[in-house]
Image (tube, rainbow, N blue to C red; front, side, top):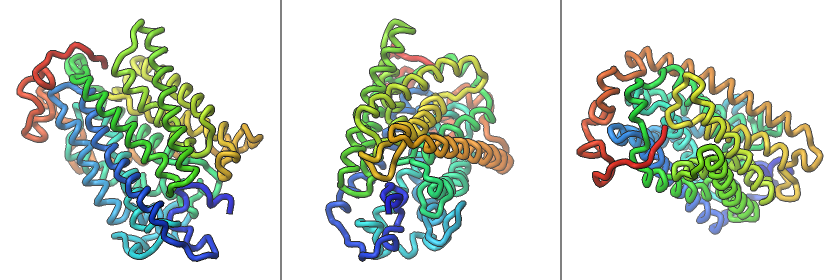
Amino acid sequence: MKRLALPLSLLGTLSTAFAATPILDTGDTAFMLVAAALVFLMTPGLAFFYGGLTRGKSVLNTMMMSFIALGVGGVSWVLAGYSLAFGEGGNALIGSLKNVGFAGLAGELSGSIPAYVFAIFQAMFAIITLALISGAVVDRMKFGAFVLFIALWSLLIYSPLAHWVWSADGWLFKEGALDFAGGTVIHISAGVAALVAALMLGPRMASVKRTAVPHSVPFVLLGAGLLWFGWFGFNAGSALGANQTAALAFVTTSVATASAMLVWLAWESVRDQKPTAVGAATSMVVGLVAITPACGFVSPLSALLIGALGATASFWAVQLKHRFQTDDALDVFACHGVAGIVGAILTGVFAQSAYNEAGSGVLDGNWAQLWVQATGVLATIAFVGLGSFLLLKLVGALTGGLRLGAHQEMTGIDISAHQEQGYSDDEGPLGAPVLLGGD
């Protein structure tokens, strides 16, 4: 019974795990509906965050890649994604087809909440994972190719990985991997997929890259704020009820993010002699990513350290990226992949049974948990890396190539992809000249 206390691995299995008949809790249900709505808000928030970081000529396309994820992810999750991830009767690698089209969920409970509520909460996770990938390929990937890629990726990469980690049948779940709200399933997977996509597309044209400064820093700050707000639903909601674990996850999420911001700005001040607004916004996201796998297992003081270490690792990953040819335009791997890896490993260090009986790490003398966490990280990197490479090859063959033509890249993707412009000129919102920016 101890292992069943792990959130997000309950996945509708509670109805058979307990001898007593599950009882609907309206308080938990209301809490989870709000949490699902908060996680939904994160994807439009990400659109503002990414949109502000790009040049004005590509702002609509950048934001559309997040918004299209709402459509693609929402449909694919209902049709088959949920069943492949959480369908009962599957094996160690994939769920069954029992719940295709959300079949069999009507009137059922997942613990104390309706199965429909759990399913739609999980849909929001799947959606934002798809949107996160887009940050690596802005300004150069065909919109149609991106849409086809995330449709296939959601079913063939995301759903199996979610099954591995969060389903009671999954092999990483059985190994004891701890991932409270998606460090491996969401952030490492999105970061690795983004890195692979950036490598396969190649760098932006030199002239485009030189002008690719954040065209709207206020958009970036707005997006980061919405992400932080929505992330409380993301992490606290992963307790699947209004309970002590949800309260802990809420607190550690806030603490780690605040810590990450201060540490990142300190590094900026040491290196560049000035803290930046873009740095503040970026560090918020990094802190949120780092604490996600650990938030329901660790103390607030441990969360401070996780936020600080995650920020330090991601900050220097961003600085070092310029030494490589990889053009991960919006630093998806450095911020989500690296912080996700750090958070996943540190979960194995700081998890304590005093805070959640389902998690026990090095602080409790359980050194074996480090190996389990490392296994989960390595398996995620290998599976997502290879799978993303193969899917991108397939999509490229089906769409006549992944990349836009040189003229389209130069003039901006908004007109070529959507026949629309974000602004009448490239000066940014309200026609104000851009004074702040950075690659």
